[in-house]
Image (cartoon, rainbow, N blue to C red; front, top):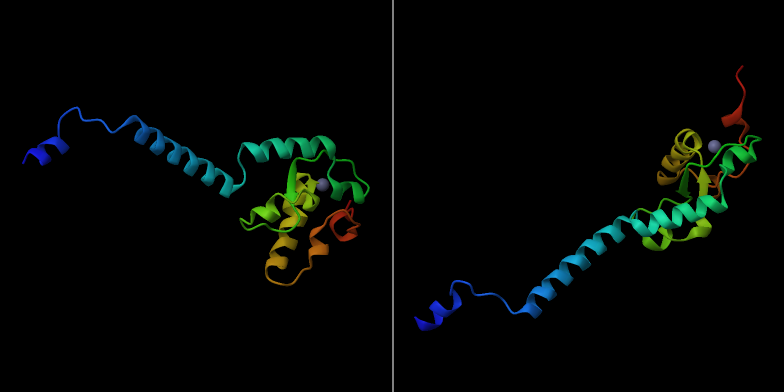
Length: 134
Ligand SMILES: [Zn+2]
């Protein structure tokens, strides 16, 4: 009885060290979740740095157009693989139009096994995508 009463004593607080441990575990979990998504603060910094060095869409550039890059694309879909995610040699600066109109369809074919990694790199001539229709 005395033991039980002691456990549920009003005002009983866990030792401060236990509180600190729980806070650290929560913080670690939060960081882990952010890191596993990949698109946290570290990515924002890396993305900005990359776009400063590669300010133009490489796809437009290879096809005779000068367009500001709007995003950093992962050449190979990373699918949550952080090794692929952070491999900056496999990043490419694209405008939103090239990403949506050209990269995403190729990426779908790649995921279906019908496109190669080389096709995912958009710094090449693609007359089919840039044909002037009028
Ligand atoms: Zn473009």
